[in-house]
Length: 103
Ligand SMILES: [Zn+2]
Image (cartoon, rainbow, N blue to C red; front, side, top):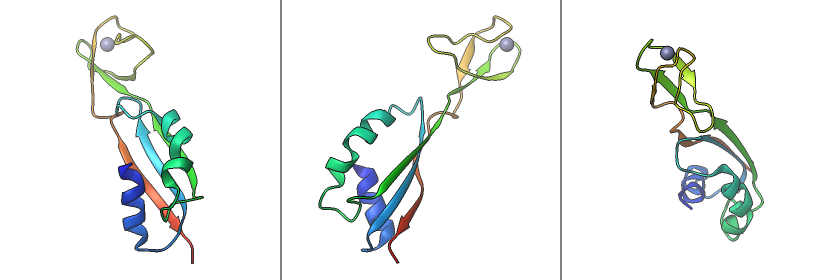
């Protein structure tokens, strides 16, 4: 997993104790599977045993009719005005917010 490699690189050889991730719901990355497999993937890396926190970002849509920005509802692209929303960049995030390393 790239996240593990990136975190280990940031740590510069120190042991990573905490990794905070930001994951947009439209990023194509499943927060659940990262949570599920983190311990296994982190094994034998500087990230082994680190605490993982994941902040999820809701996808934001921009209405093509009234220009409003709104959070996408499940299975719907529709604005409150009935217009159709187009995806914005908000919700496509996938990055490490910060890491903590052992002193
Ligand atoms: Zn609208």
